[in-house]
Each structure stands twice: as C-alpha cells, then as structure tokens.
Length: 152
Image (cartoon, rainbow, N blue to C red; front, top):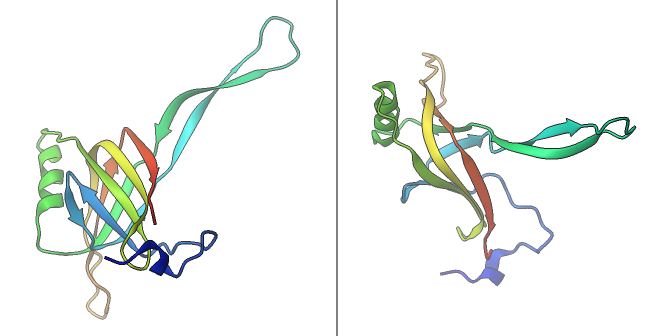
C-alpha cells in the first residue's frame, strides 16, 4: 500500500475531481463518471420581538439536495433493481458514501449519505453517429449526509 507521503500532493494543493468511488450498502461502485448535487442548506427563520428595530435570524431545518450519479452503462443490474423496487412501491432506503481519493487511491475525504432511495432514473441518449458511451443516470433522495476527513 502506498504511503501518504508518496501522494505528491502538498497539504495546500487541490485534489482532482476525477478520482472518486461510490459505495452503497458496502458495495463499491468505481465506474461512475459524474456525481452532482452534494449540497445542503439551513432554512433561515426570521423573527422580530415587539418594537425592536433589529430582525433576528436563526437556523431552522436542514435541507439536503438530491444526489445524481451518472455512469456508462454496465450490465450489473443493482441500481436498476433498486429503482424498479421504488417504482413498484417498495422503497428500499440505503446508506452509502462518495469517496474522494488521492492519486494512489487512498481516501482523502468521504461524504456518507443516509436514508437514500432513487427518485429518478434516466436512460441513454443514443446517436448513430456518436462515439460516446451510453450513460445512465440515477437520482437519489437523501435525508442527510456527513463529511469525514480522510487521512490522505
């Protein structure tokens, strides 16, 4: 296993957005070409007491955006079966991780998401003259996520 010092990256160097893997319920999915939607925001509650001239603001409920995973079509049916179950009214909530890696495949940062289930599946755009891979997308609802700094 490569040592952390062999990363060639200084502490203040940026990490590339191209080296990541996805885990869902302990199964590693390294073949995704794109992950979007990792965002959260706090609802802002505004209040004013009596004739006070200052409007107070405090955080309210947290809202987490849906996460979209895109990948070239592969013949493993895991994500399709998960979507199909939701379509049939059998929601299967799952947890997983989006893992950012360094140049040697060591974990730099991890976003763990919880209570996810697919709310949208999008098939390929096909083109008889094209040269791109067939790409499918799955959009997941997540109830919350957390960020954990890795050792790399």
